[in-house]
Length: 185
Image (cartoon, rainbow, N blue to C red; front, side):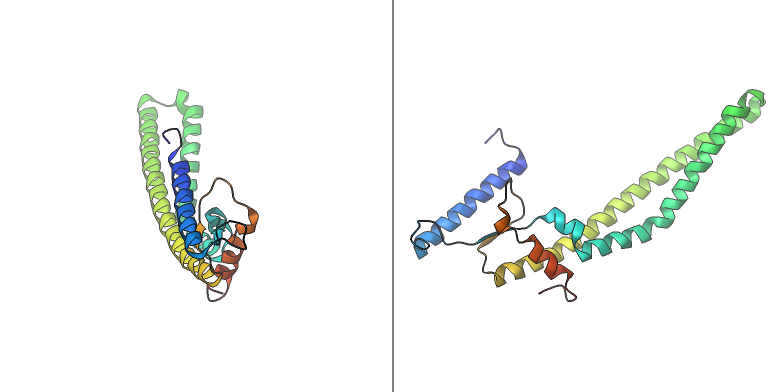
């Protein structure tokens, strides 16, 4: 399996694991309806859809946007000031004295360095908060997936797969349960 990427290897191992579980289940229970197939029930959820479409994910996104809007606006204003100063320096630089031009260039360099630092901090803070918010949404979603799986008598539910038959996709059920006022069915 050297030629498979890590996600594909995980999916392959998960598939083999599921097949072995279903095989053991089939041996214990016998063939389903005489067709020789295991009687296990398999489900799949599309995590990406849950992170985009669920009410908790949308609420987390809106909260992040509101929390970081002021800092984003400040960065945009700072970028506009840097651009204006750069344009002024380009336009007026040839007629400025050496000391004025040197001072303006130093001011521009300082502003640029400060802007880059603040932009880096903004990105790091936003990514950290986004990751925490997504982890909370995924934690809640996993609890709902477990509820849906238990209520639907699923033997196994996958989150990653190369191919999924739409008949085993339970993402809509999970979204409906997540979006319910109490967060469950």
